[in-house]
Image (cartoon, rainbow, N blue to C red; front, side):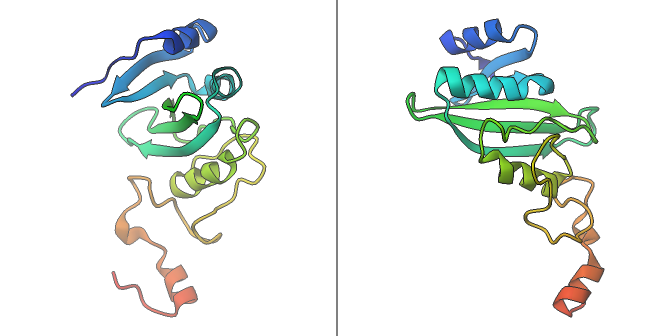
Length: 168
């Protein structure tokens, strides 16, 4: 099943407010999303919050497609209590690209961006504390990147901190 165009007042307002910055407004299995230029995401998220009542950043995530030039999909999942509606804002990032932080719009972005940094190695420009949040500080690599093999785990860290040889 393919995504279909998401039509209505909100997609129209988004396209008018951000001309040339919205690649598509689509829906897939009842899930509405906006594919946007990475440089515009902070402004789009802020517009959705302040002018469209999408006041809750539910989650942020990334997906790794190592064969693509812009290998990462970044996804902001935003909810409106007033509308009882959820929107996903999606943008694409190349390896080494540093998207702007959305912590100035949603405080919850702080830990969510740190998780993406920890798991995928994507550092957010302007983030107040871009440090690991799940893995130990000395951990090498980013476990959710598809080029990070399951046997690539830091055996020295396991030996040093758990006093065991890796079971792998």
